Length: 298
Ligand code: GLU
Image (cartoon, rainbow, N blue to C red):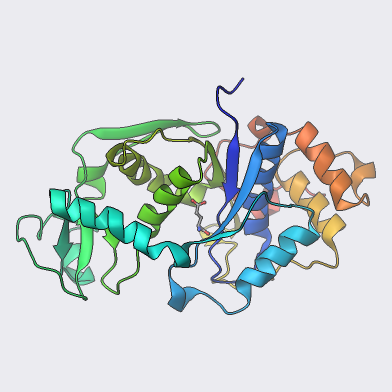
């Protein structure tokens, strides 16, 4: 089926504890990997240190273990890989693909959030407070998501040259995620649909890095109410590890996998085995968002 072995991953940001929304993303990527007899890697996206909550990484790892989602190999931490990302940025600065920028948020907001290229030809020198932007292409970048179907963006018109290093010196998510997925040989990305908007930017970086992009499956994002994502910011409760079987059953049901009722009290290993053998992501609605109240109830 797949010419190359399947390699999937879960890449949480430790800006809070694992909540139900992130459990769904972890579970979907795990099930997709295991149903393809693939490996499932774990990468901690801890570049934005000010946003990282002490103890969150440990909580995420312990929760995954309690839910039986055991990853393959070593856990990668982005914070230890900064020199590698910087190397790519330096190459792009040398070749003119990227440039320094000192524009303020207000300046960009005045242009409707699309960066107008103000600093592209200014040739600003290095400064600790300068961001680095990469040039965006004029043509449309598109892909076919396994669930959402066709998705395309004209980066130059809709986003503009985008940040690969922020003004506070933090390497941008868009760059680190691509460098790491390439380095880890990731063939399949399964993640929340809040990131589908980022995918064309990431596909552009794959082109610049002369690498084959992965397949994508963006699962609908669960909203508590219209416009209210289940997120760490909105203080969704951390996932409880003492009730792992009941919560896992609920998560499998929320992914529209229709688990049989007698699986409800089974140990997590048994539930995961059933769910990987029966994994049918096409049962999920092809929607970017779903209201929590409309999820199949366990
Ligand atoms: N670290 C990102 C997050 O927690 C996810 C990255 C990805 O799956 O590409 O939202």
